[in-house]
Amino acid sequence: MPVTILASTVSQIRAIVVTCVVTFFVLCTFSDVFGSTPEPDSSSIKFHRGAGRFAPSRAVERAVSNPEGEPEHAGGEAPISADDIPHGVSVFMPDNFVKHLVLPRTSSEDVTWLTYLPEDLNIVPKTYLVDPDKDSVLPGTRTVPINKGHEAQAYLTYIIEHYDNLPDIAIFTHAHSTAWHNNDLQLSSTPVMLLEMNYRRVVRHGYMNLRCHWKPGCPDWIKPNSTEYDDFKKEESVMYDSFMELFPEEMVRGGVPNILGTPCCAQFAVSRSRIAQHAKERYISWRKWITDTPLSDEVSGRVLEYLWHFIFSSPSLAKNADKAMHCPAEHVCYCDGYGYCFGDATKFQRLIEKRGEAQKLAERLKAAEEGVGKQDGEDEAWRQAGIKQWKWELSRMERECEVEVQHARRRGSDAKMRRGEVGELEFSR
View (spheres, rainbow, N blue to C red):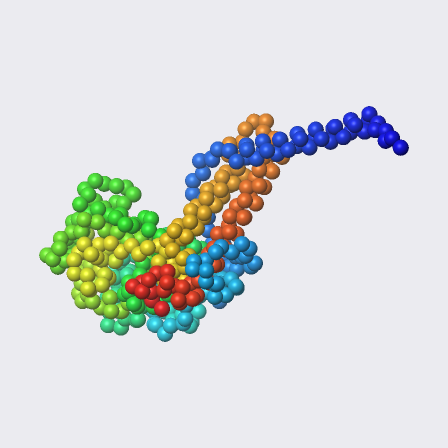
């Protein structure tokens, strides 16, 4: 029986086909436009997933409960565990070291985050109030002779007061619980860094800068011979004269180094033996220099910021030039220092770049949500669809980054993997 196709049916089919084709090209065009949207001039949005959500006596965050697409790991070795290791949980075996946490603070700073540190960490806080009200300071409050030199005044005061009764490890940090200069992969959190730190590394190497990222500070941040004023590093133009005043003994042996390099920002841990390698009188003289120098509070503190590694360098390093730079490879610092092992420097850098891309997307998304770059007559539904797509993409990138971080932590929990990544000279068990 012949089939009769009505004209109306043909018209309907033609309309459906045309609609599909048009829809396809509209979607392609939308994708091209969306991908080429110019970046707005957004300034200081940080990409710190989960920062500020640290809770006492439990894990900070369980960011990815069921990671998918786990990346291939170096050497084909399987991770030691398929479970996530929450931020704030150490992958290292417990130690019996006694630790003091030296913490300068102003009267307005909140240090209640100290209560997050469990007793079995063996950390005894030693807080120093740098701006005490002499009429209302409580008995037993530790203070400094003068509020000058930023954290250096409190650090040196602690060493002078405790020189004859030092702990195994002294940790020197700022009072804020989160800061840009803390480690990015550890939620920029001071308590997370302290909870996850490998304290055996401090004892073995004698000195450990808590910050792994090189910028700012490495490899040759300060050039003491430079006399040009740089507002971004005000201490550089006065470093030559300051070094001569602080280290007369070292000047006789080797003069002022041509460069000084170490990760910023005056947060580090030192073993008892490294502190004791200098006589107590030297620490007294360095504190006196801070008090008497005509340099400002800020500049005098920043001079010391880039000299702590020189002060606590290994006594086996005889030349000043050998002590002038302390810049461990970033992936080595993360792996042996905190148990985040990515396999090698290239894989670590790849993750950092991916996180950088996510940060840029977060900045663009925030700007778009605030209406930056919005044009008159622009279709709002189309714009909101684009924002929704960006949010999905940012979530995907964050999830992928956290999967890689979790994989690195599982690698870090295996001592053999740590040793294989950092080498015997850096490995601290």
